[in-house]
Length: 267
Image: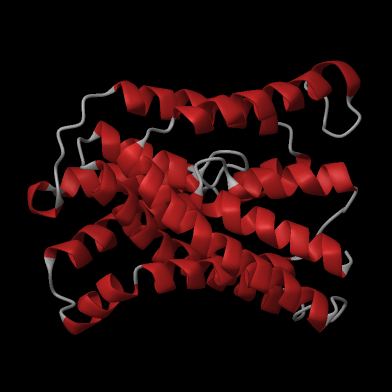
């Protein structure tokens, strides 16, 4: 992977992490299309942590308030949402890892993301905010986040969709989705670091400049993606993203069914 490929993948990671189109699915997609066999865990951890910085910057005031007053309802809801996310990740890690390696379900998962987004938009929004939110709401959203570990199922898409289905206010749904991404991304990065340590240590094969370029691109694009997503969810709807992933999923399936040029054939 050269510097420009790292920049490109960093931008893809930053934008697709927070838009409801699946960051992991797009990383797998473009790795296949560009012929990059594997970017490596070191790079994946770095760009994920860079996108985490984007969330922290955008929601810095909320985070400072949480740190000042940690024993409040929002903190409790975030903790409750994080529990099923972590449990699903730990229990089904091997299955998810195999799906990442093969990419066999990529097309179907993009399409599934689109279906879920359209379904969420068809539900009546009861405009519940934090005061009206309950334990079940948090648990459902956290479970959705756990299921989004699948390669081309969008984390932000599933969590925001789950929040809308549970009747949360659209702006608060986006805010809660991004806030619960913080422990999820940190937990996933920690697990990857432990995996690297178990396998003998971090790879030194990647150029530090290449790594820095990917991280910077992910952080900047992630920042604008978060800001854009909050605005679009407040003023528009998720249908445009659903149509986008339908097109991407359809093209991937076309290759899987008939050509097998870039992706594993289904049959």
